[in-house]
Image 1: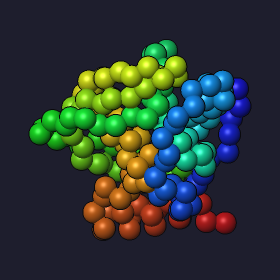
Image 2: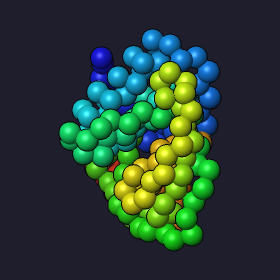
Image 3: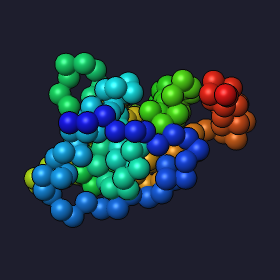
Image 4: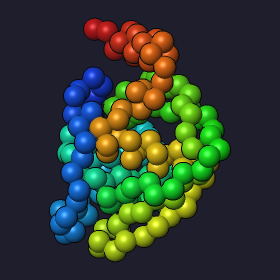
Amino acid sequence: MTIRPLVQYPDQRLRQAAETVTLFDETLRVLADDLLDTMRAAPGIGITASHIGIPKRIAVLELSAGETVKIYINPEIIWTSEKMIRHQEGSVSMPGVVDEVERHAAVHIRYQDLDGKEHIEESEGLLAVCHQHEIDQMNGIFWIQRLSRLKRDRLIKRYEKLYRR
C-alpha cells in the first residue's frame, strides 16, 4: 500500500471522463488499497482514481474512521430522488476550500465490486452526496462546476490565495 501523489486543481485531468474498468485483477486491488491510503493521508472521505491521475472508474469512500470502507468499480446513478439537500463539499485535489453544493437527497447506484460482481446500493444524506460527488468526478465534472459562476470564482480566488508562493 502506497500514498500516491494527488492531482491538484486546476490540472485538466480532473475534467477527463474516466474509462470503464474491464480487468478485475490484483492490479485493481492494489489501486484500491493505494486510493484508501492516499485518501486517509489527504485527509478525505472519498477519492477516485482520477484524483491520482489514473482515468479509471474506481472510487473509495470511508465516511468516518472505523466505518466500513466502500469500494465502487464502474458506479453509475440509476435513480435520484426529487428532494434536494445542500451539503458542504470539497476535494482532496483542492484542499483548504469548501462550499455548499445542492444534490439529490437520495440516489440508487449500480456498481461492481473488486471481483466484478454487480450490486445496487441505495443511499441518502451524506452517502448519497458522496456517491454523486465521486461519480461526477469520474464523469469529468469537478465539484466546483456545480457552483454558480460567482461562488466558483470566489472559491478559486480563496484557493489561489492559500497556495500563492
